[in-house]
Image 1 (spheres, rainbow, N blue to C red):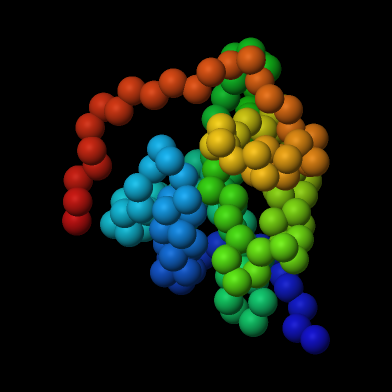
Image 2 (cartoon, rainbow, N blue to C red):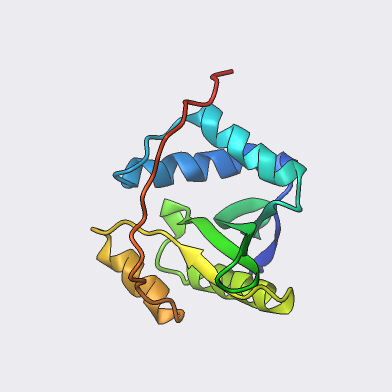
Length: 156
C-alpha cells in the first residue's frame, strides 16, 4: 500500500498545483480560473517562503491535496497570523479525508510557529465547506469580507 506524505510544495509542483487551483476556481462564484494568474500566484509563494507556505499531500509524487498559508500581522491580535487559502482535494480523491489530514497539519504548523489566528474565506453558498471548517474548530466571524480590485495582473 502506498503511503501519503505531507510536505511543502516545490517549484517542480507548479503544473499540478495550477491544475488543482483551476479546478477549485471553476467551483467558486467569486473567481474565474486563469492558469497564468494561478501559476504566477503560486510561484510568488514558492519563491519567497517568508510570505507563506503551500503544503501538499502526495502519494508517489502525485499531489492529491493542497492548501496555502499566507503570513501577515494582526494589530488586533498583536502578532503574526495566517490567512488560509486554496484548500482543495483532487476530484478523484475526495471523500478520503485527505483534506482533513492536510488541514490538521497546517493548523499544527501554525501553532508550532506561534501564529495567533487562522482566518479563511469560504463560499457563502457552500455549506459542505462551512461544515468541513467548523469540524476543525473554525467559526463564522461577524466580519464581512469586502474587496476593491485595483487592477488586473498583467498577462504573460
